[in-house]
Length: 275
Image (cartoon, rainbow, N blue to C red; front, top):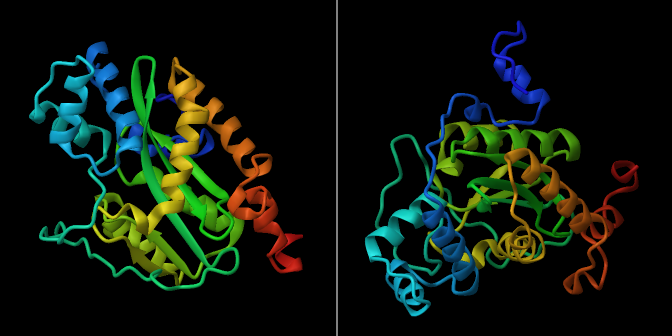
């Protein structure tokens, strides 16, 4: 799809094709099929036992007959972008230029769309490889406002998703993320500051702070990803797009009184904005 000899800049080609700019310059190394199978299982176990670290996951895998060491599990977890989710003292320092912002949602009554948006990244296994999915979600309605796929964990695809959400839906009062390097980067926080948005960040390793996005990942993986074996990034993008459209428009949520996220989102917007 990308024509490197075309007069149109690569960045513009990527924008038109909704591709992450970083994917244009990244040459992926093939991951052995055996490793992909273990990573797929780690992903499922992580959804079931989000508190499990590398030691517990190693023992769970060994209990299923998979011979593996703790260091290998830890390496795979880093590659997948997951960690054990539990509150613990934050003894690590942010990277140079990466500021950690306080968590602003504790005790806050979220009563309307566009009051709080949240964003997260998750690992998506494919038949031969994997990609990462980033999504911007409206906290009140659970509606997915924008999303992007990438073959790397660079910040570009997150910026693309946020820029689309801002262009299509205005801006929230608060934007919540975890403390991942993509979200603490100057490029990401700068985009939010430039738009006058308050920045909120989860306590390190605390899944409860961003629970609605975690619930989205669980639904997405059990109702879509684990039922498929995507042959390519293009196939994954098309199939995930169909599911997320279903999730927004047709899938009722018990927490929304059986309404869909789209119904909850637009029913509470001012009439001018909804129109």
